[in-house]
Image 1 (tube, rainbow, N blue to C red):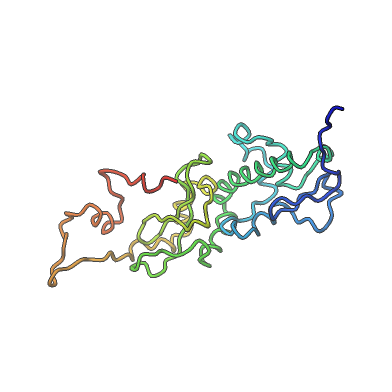
Image 2: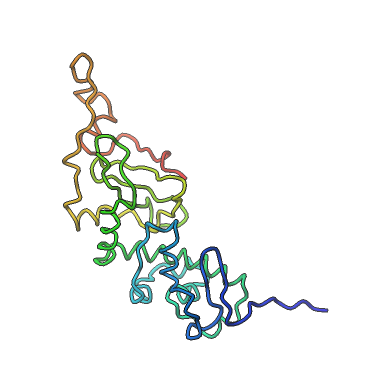
Length: 246
């Protein structure tokens, strides 16, 4: 007897992790299933993300360079925007799980572009002011709120890091926030501080000055690290890339 492919029952709500996904066209979706973006952003581990507008997510102009890197691109976009077509009734649970994984990846890439726009910046500003991204561990920064960023726009290369607008240093978040850095991108902190210069507190930073019997140590810049902190400029002789590797 030949084996038949197992299908998910059409019109059924499938639970994938904390997500509820309707296996069918969206016009028949029950009210208990929240919009996908709202489900994603309300996930406990996704508190750094903001909700991307559906019009922005649907605009083909904002998809440039993404379609070639995302499997099930059209289906993932339908899932994000809650526009399931009739063909969703034919997908089995395995395919829907794969589409869900690609939807998360696609949403992250859309998110990195959205937060560089006016409304996205305003949404991130609200989270920044609440300290959602954490606080600088450096004593001299007095619990300065941090900003998330990524080292590259390429997905699956580095996890998101945190930038301090006061000491201009970079920190690794706790292990509970292993988020793809491409979902925020390398430009975000600098665009954010350009849009909201009141949060650029680098001039207030007072680096610790070591002293021996009242005399300053390294006052002429004998320490490359101290010089970098004192001037709020990164070291130029070499980089600390190894410390950023995931």
